[in-house]
Image (cartoon, rainbow, N blue to C red):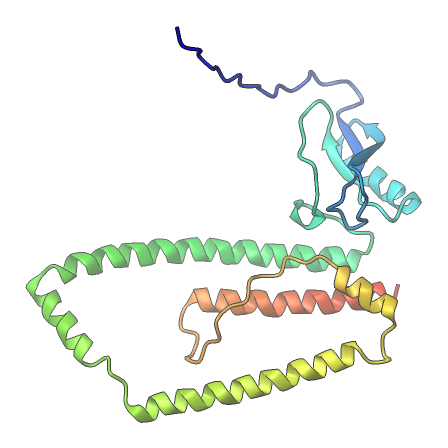
Length: 242
């Protein structure tokens, strides 16, 4: 008789609501948090009846304990451990300018995601039509004609090479200037360390583009890069002026 191994599935149930204690205010620490603690821990600051009351209380406790983020959660329900506050929706910062800046970025990001989904569906539909067309005699002839015309003139290729070399030279010089400025006497070691420890949702590097941006995908990538740089500059400005 063979041994049969069974897997027990644990279902996460919610507790019955408690009058006057539906929301809680908590702070969390971990090795991954911005305070870099050696252990995992949490502290319950208070409980309240409504989410709006919880938001107001969080501002008061934030003033008492400004070095730690305060999260408003639901009592009696399982909640994930928060390692990165930027991953939490509806974030409010002690500085109203920073709150507005991040919220504006998220709204624009949501709008771009919506447009991207629409464009993706349109591209998918067009691809399906093109695939069906390529199976016809007319479509096969068009593909042969297009492949014959794909070869670019040597002058065009050489011009792109010169564009690439000029762009790399310019960006390399800009990078050198920014590094020299960052390491200059304009900033203290503490300021540089604090700037480097700021966590932002930075996108992955992308290949350089030489042709005109002709579709929403390229516009979306460049918009994200420029906006993230703007956020970083404003955060650093806010940190050292308030």
